[in-house]
Structures are given as C-alpha cells and as structure tokens.
Image (tube, rainbow, N blue to C red; front, side, top):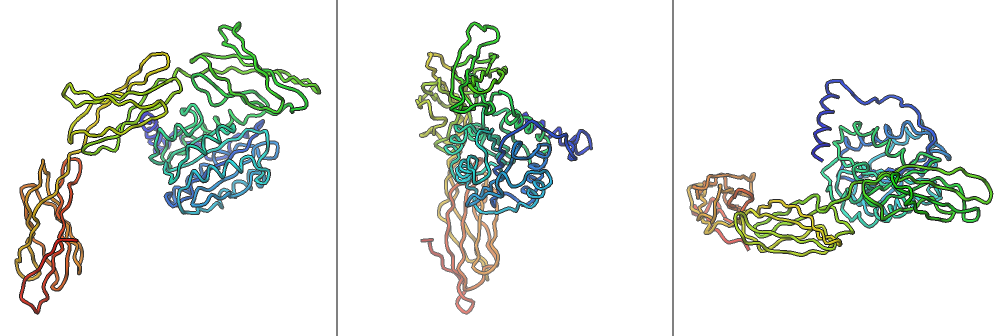
Amino acid sequence: MLAKTVLSLGLWLQFAAGQNAPERGPQPSVSNSKGDLLFLLDSSGSVSYYEFSRVKEFMWDLVQPFTFGPKDVQTSIIHISTTPTMEFPFDRYLSSGTLQQAIRNTQQLMGDTNTGKALSYAKEKLFSDEAGARPDVPKVLVWVTDGFSTDDISEPMQLLKDMGVTVFIVSTGRGNYLELSAAASQPPEKHLHFVDVDDLPIITTELRDAILDVIQADRLHAVDITSSSFRLTWPKLLSQETGYYTLEYAPIDDLARKRTKQVSGAHTSLLLSNLAPETTYEVALVPESNVHYFPPQTTRVTTLAEEISPAQVLISESAPHSFQVSWAPTLDSVISYQILYGPLPGNSVKLLEVDSKSNSTVVENLAPNTTYLVTVTAVYKSGKEKSLSAKACTQEEGSKVRHLRFEDMGPNTLKASWDSADGKVLGYRVRCRRQSGPSSVLSVSPQIHSVLLTDLASGTTNKVCVKPVYKNQAGKGLCRMVHMQPATEAQGYKHRQRA
C-alpha cells in the first residue's frame, strides 16, 4: 500500500505539472470481447457529491473503448444504499453514446452503506434473464468503495466468486486491506486498487486491461491465480448433448507429468488445484464434439510464489490492558497459529494458541503503558513453522480527578478546584456547559488545579467537568452540576453531584 501511495503521489505531481496526464479523449476501440460487466457503485451518504461525480467519470473512461451489444460487452450499475437498486439492466444501452449519457444521468441515492445486501442482489441480477444478463458469458464485478460497509460482505462475495464472477475492487478511502484483499479475486495485486478519488485516471488502463483478460472472447484463459491453483475459463462451444471437453496440463519443463481432466459440454470453467508454486503450466482445451470440429485452444499460466503466513502482523485497538493482533494471509496448509507475547525488556513470555481459520485475537491482562514484543507463528501441516514479530504498546491507564469543588468569587464567577490525578498527567481539560450562554473549554498545565469560571448567569444550573490528559489518551472526567442563586437572593451558589 505504501508503495502504491508513493507512486500515486509521484504521478499526481507529474499530472499537476502537465506531464504524462492520462488521455481523456476517445480511446482505440476494443473488439473481440464478450461479457457482462457490473459496477457496484457506493451511492450512500458516506460518499460526497464530488466523489460520486469523479467515480462516474472513472466508470465511463474505463468502458469507453469497449464495443457494446448482445454479442459483445454489456454493462449495468447497482447502487449501494439502504436498499440496493439497479440503475438499468444489462441489455438497455448497447451503444457508447447512450451508455455514456446513462452514466452521466445516474443520481446518488444516499442512505446506508449496505454492501452485503447489494452483493446478494448483484448475485441475482448477474444471472437473471430479466436483468438482461446472458448465460455462459464471463461475469465481472467492479466494486468502487470508500472502504466502509455497515453489513458483512465476506459471505455474499464468496458466493459470487464461487459462481465464477471475477471481482475487482477500487477503494478510494481507508478500507481494511485484509478484508478487501480477501474479498477481491486472486491475486489481490491484480484485482485490488487503493487510490485517491482524484487519482482514479492513474489506474484506468491497468484495470481495463485486467478486465479484458477476463472478457476477451474466443480464447482459453486463467483467472483467480494463486500459488497452488487457477481457474480456467473458455467460451461456450458445446452443450451437454453435443460433446465434452478434455483438459490437459503439465509444467512446461516436465511435459511428461501431463494430467488430464474431462468435463461435460455444459461447462465453461474448471478449477485446477494442487499445483506447484512459481511454475509455468502448458494448458490445452480440446472440445470433443459430435456435431462440429473445434480446434484445440492453448494457453500458458504461471502460478504465484508460495504464500507464507504470516506475511503481515498488525496491532490495533490498543487499550491499557489489551490490544488486538491480526495477521494475513490465512492458508489451508496451516493447522494453527501461536501468539507469543511478553514485555520489553524482560524474559516473561506467554503463549496463546489460535485455530487455523482465525486471523486475529485479543491479548488481555496486560500492564498499562508497556511495550510488548508479539510473535505470530504459523504451524504448517508439514511440521514447518513460520514466524513474524511486531511491537505493541498498551495505553497509559487513565485516572480521574478527585474532589471537584467550587468557591464563590463574586457576581457570575466561580473558582473550580480539584485534587491531582494519578500517573504522568500532561494537563487538565475543564469544560463548562452553561445553561445560558456558550460552552467553554479550558486547558491548563499539570501543576494547575483550579480555574475561574465566568459569565455564569444567576439562576442557572451549569455542568462543569474536569478531565486529566495523558500522553496516549484522556483520563476519566469528573463532573458536577453547580447552581447559581438568583440575583435577588444572597450572592452564592449551590452544587450537587450529578446523578
């Protein structure tokens, strides 16, 4: 992410100087492509009008070169909001001009960011004749998000990918990398982009080329490539009644290890697993038809380097006596995780064991304001172990002030005094909420334990709170209600403890 951020910044500076700016004019037409392309558009209230407009421009720039039609590319938009809504069906706009105008006319719905609900809705529409979707064509989902969702996305997203949908994610906000990398198709380096909304043109060509790899018609190709598997997809050539497909694959440096699979003519994809990492495979698809001759199709696919877990260890939600430890990725080859932690400096170490499906745990019963060394170890089925360490700091334990009291200092004025709080206090914050007049906040140094409160109207009840401030957090506030006597009575005040 850091590398991408630096790259984005560098390119943006070049754009600002008028160099290497992406072309926004007409792009060369892209033909020989066929697929249903669905945009999942964040239309909720968490997105500003400006951001929504920039995303619409990005969507049009992305699809502008495509050829649209019933035998080419079809596209649609589903809004993420309180209730998901389809802007238009796939088969409504079959020319560049009409589609461009439809995207321009798309209006933001506002509402909640119910992405999980929108994904379930998308699963229905991507395979629905009523929505203009076509059977047996590649399905692509492009989710543009500010990184926030009010409901769970993992289960509906996995169902989409299990049905053969290729998922691209563009995050224009501070999305959770672990969550979004798991949601996108694999590998995330190809299917997940983090970019500021003003820098979306930077990724347009790269994302378009990745989509073309999926929807380029009439050829065998691979998607969802990992270190041990990839999914092959191909155009529909046969049917259940007219024949079957034979798939042959082998490492190019050892063709004698050829393996063969057969699937019915109704299939247009197949997952190949238990493959070697960092290996290039020669793959051949042979349509066996009893009606027509179809020539074999071939491709080469290189698996990724072997995944190692943990490759990342993240510390979050730090508190005085606990913090959360997260790691990624989680692999099927891991049987358990061990979390070793202990204070620095020191020799005291404790152990937590976590099952292989988990990617986080909370470490508790810790000392406040202490640095810990945390080591996450993955125990593999083979007996190997891989470890990665990180430092974590607990927060300083907050304390509250004691004995908040008041002294009459004349008309409409009180002196608030308190006893010092425990620990290394950096200062105190005094808030006065007046019944009549504006509230005020005073910040004083740790040596000062009293302030003057003025402009307290007679006959009013006011709330005064004093809170200690520590290096990493604020302490607990102590509050009192103080009543100023009416002007007709003897000068003074009454105070009572807040209920």
